[in-house]
Length: 253
Image (tube, helix red, strand yellow):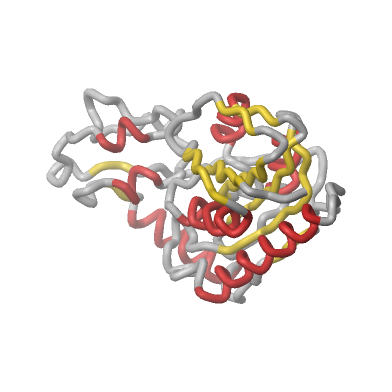
């Protein structure tokens, strides 16, 4: 099968998951992007397209909101590549979960990859990643996917993970706003994927809805949003020990 067109479908609160999806998809063919970070749209991708689905890893799982958004995507026996992007700790069941989700939507998973990016909460962990070596690995991986499809091989690789998936316990802290810095522009409220920020009071956060994806923190033009510094410091101490060693990309074909 000759690939001419590719699609990058991703959930990328901090921007790095989207970078991974675009890098792989662009190396496969002329790429069209579907950024599902804040909202989904009905999309049908035909069998002549290579679809790249990418999700960040939250506690060894893909974000539930992205799993819900994927209900609007339909494949037609379309070859798919799934990517789990994580902050140098582990991806656990996330890659398998994403593969299962896209297969349920009519796609054929032909390859999978786990790549490392800056940690979304403790941003000193894996800072600067994906780096030059990571991007080179993504491009090389895409080349192997292209060769596999050109040979007419649509076999599904073995993807690590377990079913049932591990239980996700959530994050015990949520971003809040500094009222002195918040100018009530509403950008965070409009773009929050979980609908956790009221449009009429963007300096507030509904902790029952918030998934701590950190999108509001990364996108606030006035740097008004952030986590409780005491809780963040405790998390930093805990994660720095678990994430000290550099993890490398893993690819499955």
